[in-house]
Amino acid sequence: MKRALVLQHVDRDHPGRFLDFFAGDDLIPEVVRLWAGEEIPNLASFDFMFALGGPQDTWQEAEYPWLAMEKQVIREWVTVRAKPYFGVCLGHQLLCEALGGEVGFAERGEHGIHNVELTEAGKSHQLCRGLEPSNPVVQWHMAEVKRVPEGAVVLASSDRCVAQCVAIDDHAIGTQFHSECSPQTVAGWTATPGYVPLYEKHRGPGSYRQFVEEAYPLMHRMTAMTRRIYDNLVESSGLRK
Image (cartoon, rainbow, N blue to C red; front, side):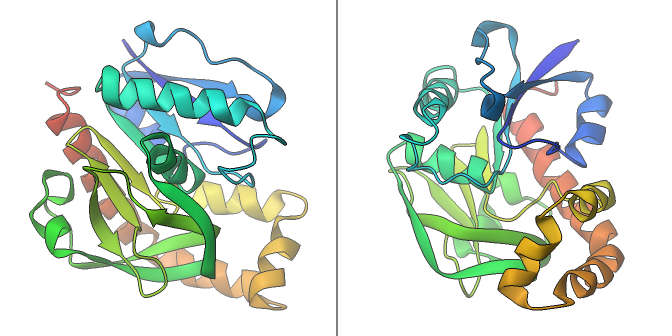
């Protein structure tokens, strides 16, 4: 059996639909609760790294000292070990900053369902093989990657955020959007104290209910997109042989 190291930044968060993908590849997830003070174990015994989203910002190392170690670990994993990495939202931003990019507040945050478009580079990249040129995704962020690391490729953009999806060679990828978001994820968000008011702070009263009603009919399409990206990643990285 292979093992996936999951970096968690907030209680109740989980890899969503990726858990089904892991099961299909005999990848056993091991969650490290960084926000609760758990330490990242020795990387040698892991085959895949998955970094979740969270309420922290990449530059808040004074408030969250473990962010510095996490970035160091991501840097080692992606550049030295060159093993498969997938980061979502904060995990995407951490990937870019760890490798020398820059993250800052977005001019306009994104919340709810938005479309992302493949770039010209994305249309021909191995990790985007088989994707539609335009795809609906779930967004929830107020920070963004302002400058990607040297050698990184921007695979997808939106009208509000250029670096929606970034690749490092063919073994590491980050999505600003919540590619892990499944019906179970939405149910968890709905039941988590403070999540609905926080969302409606940005989108207005009643907007969370509208988000749920818009998201569910699109779940099959979003799952297919994420499945394709994941399959491309594990195949191109050599994890699935």
